[in-house]
Length: 87
Image 1 (cartoon, helix red, strand yellow):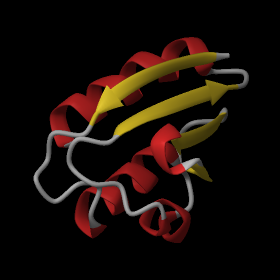
Image 2: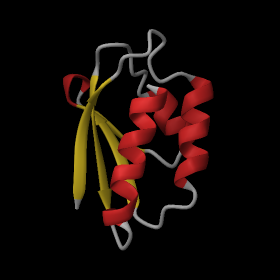
Image 3: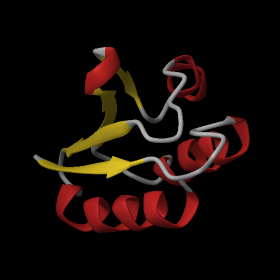
């Protein structure tokens, strides 16, 4: 299992457009990918657009992304880089 924390910097938080891009990117990942916001005590399957949108992640929220499965070693750095570039 691999995980990382990331503070959302985008002023709109995780909104529809980048959430859709995230879900599309994760389609090629075999591992399960979960996103959690500790302050809100919520978590969701990051491969499901509506689940990510329901999290209502705002600017300043710290999210924990957990990757677990057969390709976690290669997927984790790519997903972390995606967060840095898009959120």
